[in-house]
Length: 416
Image 1 (cartoon, helix red, strand yellow):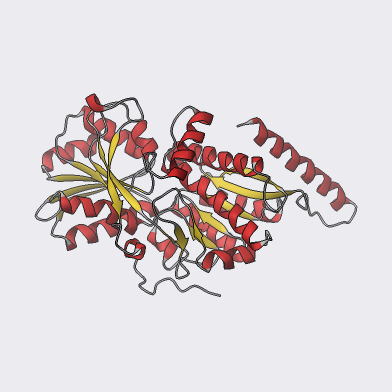
Image 2 (cartoon, helix red, strand yellow; image 1 turned 135 degrees about the vertical axis):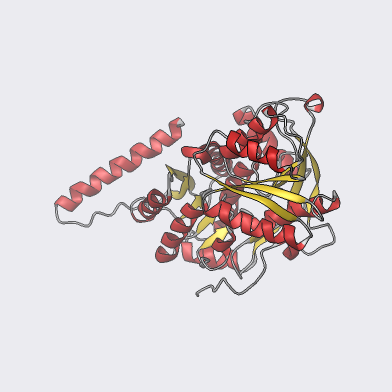
């Protein structure tokens, strides 16, 4: 962990020790945030199968904080990050509560696991503290589990499916085709497969094989042998994190020639699979070749700082902190309840894309463009990062952004 994070941790421990001493004197054990800083909690997994994505998330939010502070901070105060590893839903819930109650953060950014995001969202709702989800995709978080303090810059599963599905239909890869799917066996995967299966079957495809894969699985040979025997037309991934890395690497090693696609994807997991192993058409919420001035500036700054280009996960955490800083400045306060009200009123933000994004009041989902990419042949790669070509954006330039958002089916009953 970076030196600045060690300094932050030492400051927090020192404050906690002081509070303990005061409590011993019969005084309340409350550690108040310093008036010259605005503390922002960052909570995301950096261990386990989602760990590689969490590392990029931390890189993104740290860069945003540096840029904000270099420009004078927010309301004349520096932004101070309090960074934690969320680990699992139980730990995520406990750490979210600690960030709010002990560390006095103004709000929380992060998470990748849908189960952990639900746990953090429940704490946020109970404490009336804004939580911006940067990596959890489950539609249920925007549906029955929605709440007025949980916001989503990350796309819902239904958005990922529609983004890549638009191009799969164009390539005649759905109608009349036999599909075989591998799905991560936890909340995200179950929800993604439900949405993907609905889309494929409604567009004339058929699933002839459906496999649930444990999140700690590293050997995909049993699944690959079943795929070889089934002889599908299309193989679909509903996997997550380094599951995808292991799957696409071993798929290539087995020499299977069935076209592959995915309904959920992160660039970093394909980078980890090695040159020549990545194939197929995949969805992305953002990629480092998006051709806008703000996107190019972000890519340049990130690459200069970290020696590699940014990917979609760090995009979400970077933009979330920039959105919060912009909102506090526009509101002239760092009040968390007023922040929730501001975000829900349709404020628009430059999110490094062709069109601005905004959180819609129905479910707090950011309405925005998305993308699809096609894997490059290894002999056409310029370097280890050059693994795909952009296919375009969804919705089209003349379409309303809302057509990509999750359906307003009444399952989200936002309480005031």
